[in-house]
Image (cartoon, rainbow, N blue to C red):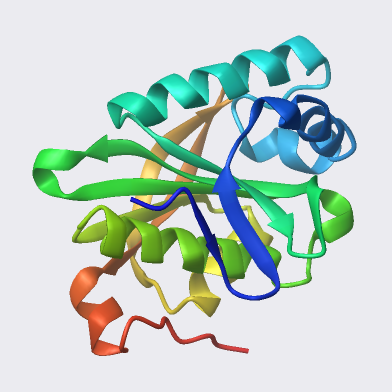
Length: 192
């Protein structure tokens, strides 16, 4: 199983202990945009939160509970552009959920789409999963665009599926299945 994948422009790689400050900085600089959609993101996010999160990711990776990657530029491995990961893993069903975020100053540059594409490759090729799901708040337009650009199948509306900062939110569920992935020769199409 690989711990990093690249497309030539960006790389997704396992978080490292040295990522504590770059992760904190990426989240802190983007908290206004990330907070509404990420349950762990809050205005008081601290270096301690960043350190604990990275430590827990190593443990979760080891037991197969989640696989979380830092998104970095191939030109600068030290700056965190975002994060992408598999969670809510059901190995017996060969499926997982995808979560992702991109720092504000790197948004709208295709980074989320490319990092999710690499994560889907990891899930299907490395882990042998047959299905990956993306659950997105109905009001998260940038994230909805990512799923649509990847040609993920919109399966429906999940009422009150997300509980974010004390509020229930409806969400759309999208999926990519291995059959679709391999039909396209291991490449997911990108819509403009």
